[in-house]
Length: 328
Image 1 (cartoon, rainbow, N blue to C red):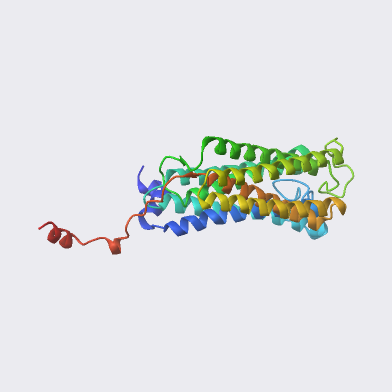
Image 2 (cartoon, rainbow, N blue to C red):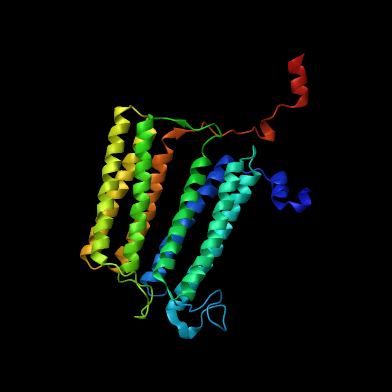
């Protein structure tokens, strides 16, 4: 395809971003994914879920909120607009990954995966509004945001690695233990969405908002049980890494995960014993993002893919005359 018809190739022909720029762009995607989760939680916690009662416009007659809709309309509409900011950040990451030399197709694919998740979750968000905050759709909306965060963290990690075949830094049983930790954390996050769907913060002041018909305290207890399982697996992983004399990097990542889990546990208990105040629930949602990031970083630290290849810049390349002299 001619470069004139391929804008990404045209950019690559004219701009060579540094490895640091690509990594920073990838990290910006992680930050924006967390912001989207937290602001989405703010929409629900301020009862602004139906601040804009329809989608894709805010009202039947207006794209933006009207003065009569008050602060709830502004909050909900602002969250919608943040999706476009997220698209811009992801777009920059895609362009930077495509323009980077040598080309990293895996980074480009991960960037595009984020784009399509954002687009899909935008549609899910619209369905959430059109169904009057159906709790199952709300849960799917949050889990899609978590999927976006997952891909963003993987891209961030891969941007600092090479393209060698993955090489395990630990024995297979330890690697399997890390998989159990990841799966348990996924179950913990899913259980948290069910707690939210059956709890008191429905996202709108209307009493007509449907809730998941499960006992809130029983689901919360299940969520707490999973917390202890994840915490126990984290401690077990640390001892296993120490026993096999794993490199310092993986052990540091597991210690970071343990610290985040403890802080998240404190926030969770404060939330439960104080009847789920909005500000604490918001902090708990932010903490859930940090826990998942820490789990992924610990998991990905258990293998090595070498150092990223960096081509010399034109300024450091030897001149043809110098090469000819060296050959003589």
